[in-house]
Length: 412
Ligand SMILES: Cc1cc2nc3c(=O)[nH]c(=O)nc-3n(C[C@H](O)[C@H](O)[C@H](O)COP(=O)(O)OP(=O)(O)OC[C@H]3O[C@@H](n4cnc5c(N)ncnc54)[C@H](O)[C@@H]3O)c2cc1C
Image 1 (cartoon, rainbow, N blue to C red):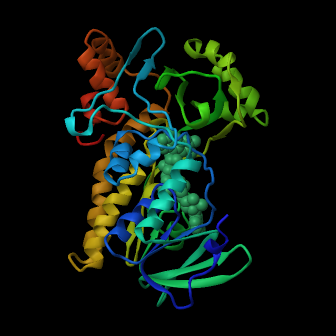
Image 2 (cartoon, rainbow, N blue to C red):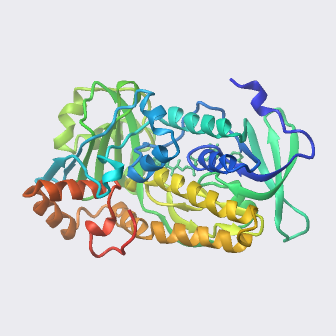
């Protein structure tokens, strides 16, 4: 444990940016800003290594960013197995192969599913190595303003021993997840709210060999599996919220019974060993929040969230970190007025995620594969090139409208 990490910064500390939260959004944002010479303080409630609820499949947009930031080799070096194949099963209709990208420069569309204990620590270490100050075990309690309703000028934070301190900053970023304290403190308007749609439950297994990513789609539920660190395999279910709630206290029993409903996987799972508790949630909302205002911005889950059925949150968090770092650099160096730079950041986020948001909401309704998808799969079964392309869409290596022409172009 890094005991020095919880010490407050010296009184009167003033930085360019305070980032609240140090996982998939906060640490890369801090790293990118620090690499450009900005003074960044990251305040994180947890202490690393620490886990968080996630099935952690990092699709191609996320992997490409890790590579660009110089972190992919370090991740691969942690013993995380590369995921080179994807298998889809729609009950009587199946497709399997290596996903491809249309960008030769990015190489084969390999993905990874690193444990968050490993990934988040690697990102935090990279932020520190870039020169950001990152304090663990510190909870941000509120934002500071010079005057009621005026611009945000810093944060009030607390340590576990009851200590309180303030830090002044030109910008405060909430990278503090779905239940964002910063979003609440600035009263960020919710722009889109589809509520929670599906429930998710998952656990780790040993002795369960899965070649890459495997997904089984049924009306009313879906099952996905992929290998991660230490010989473990993630087995995740998406199911109707009522079904999840009906499990009651015996979540393990409900989860095991539900797995038995997937004949393509049930036999192999029954021969494997459950390695830990079943985790899950039924209240994951699908939303967009207004993500900037005078002296503040939101990024990652704090600003936008969609059902984990899409397995896109980490990739979106990295993308937000990159786009917000560019916007803040423009604002902090006077290249653009802050409100224009941040408005551009939010517009890029909204345009870049809109089609996937709609797709995820449709998938999370769990009505089974629609006819566009099944006919694309049928065609791809006859043509290996088309199969690689279609699987590339599932890996996030290609745009969604390559698979579903009805979706708006631009998102992958
Ligand atoms: C069940 C489930 C499965 C998922 N599976 C996948 C998947 O397979 N692939 C994928 O890409 N995405 C997945 N996601 C989504 C993904 O986990 C999130 O999108 C991602 O973690 C968002 O990162 P973030 O940094 O924005 O927020 P978080 O990961 O939530 O991090 C926020 C951090 O802020 C800290 N914090 C919060 N409040 C404060 C405060 N007041 N002061 C200081 N620190 C604070 C928290 O301690 C936390 O460390 C899944 C999510 C769920 C719930």
